[in-house]
Length: 403
Image (cartoon, rainbow, N blue to C red; front, side):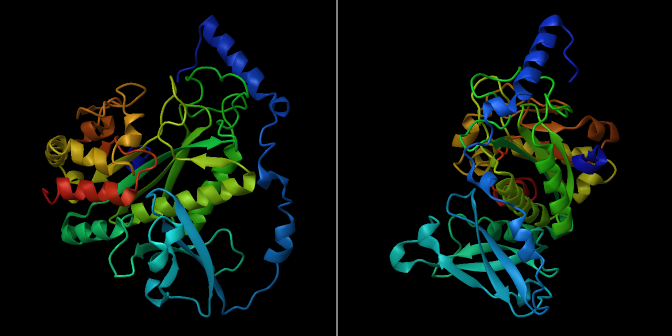
């Protein structure tokens, strides 16, 4: 898989005189943060974060567990949570109680019948609570009649996975995101105008090229502590844009991990007073959008001669392009219309394409995979705000169940 077979799953410096001028402009704009009043309107930056420590250091009863129940709301892309205290340490999700919430306040139910049920599905260590047994609980959601809510895509994925266990499907997801000030401007960008054009920022280093690395590194450590299969991180092509990777993981875990890692990212950003957006095209113009490239592999793909299985899967994907576009963002393709424009390292939303080492196609075979003759494929179409349950479900049903 891309993140570990070639860099854990497996820019050039601009040298012309014009490029040097642009870099100097970027340096001058980013080195004058005080003049630009970054985060001056962010309420969380006004809070003294050290005050909370005096309470985190209090000793709590050893038999009590704080559990943060986490779920996807009716938008299909935003997370909600609430906390409860348990009287014993759970040995697994089977020990956790179901819980209800007001679905009419999360776009999932009507007010006259609003009790919506949370069913615990996965447990993670909580990097925010002080107790050694405190946990995050990833849940899915059910209506009063017991049917999944419209935004519950996890159940369908579980059904698909149960049918293909012998195929051992692996997923690795590359989550791109953008950091914003509370006014919606990308973090670190000048208040009036724009930074230097794209080129020096991807995997960059230096105060004139990279913003908020401390937030990014805090996120990596917190995800590893939580038990997420966290594979790495890097600065992306647009300034204030970053990427991290989860996986490769078997079956459901990559999707659960991605949702919980998004929550952890947003919680850490709260503390910094910064906004995280997963919008696939936060800035119009010649700025890269944000995706969630999904690396997919099966037992047959990873075996010697697996290139044939990879090419067979790509052929099936080519015949279900419209179906996948609808599954790859929460607005059934409307969000990706702004991103998949056939340039800026994207394919056209209207046409399926594939190639080796080509980042302008729908599905890419990495060079290392082509050389090895086995491995995985990278579907570059999912948007950064996609539901990974829906993405992985579509891949399994098209490539393995022939639906």
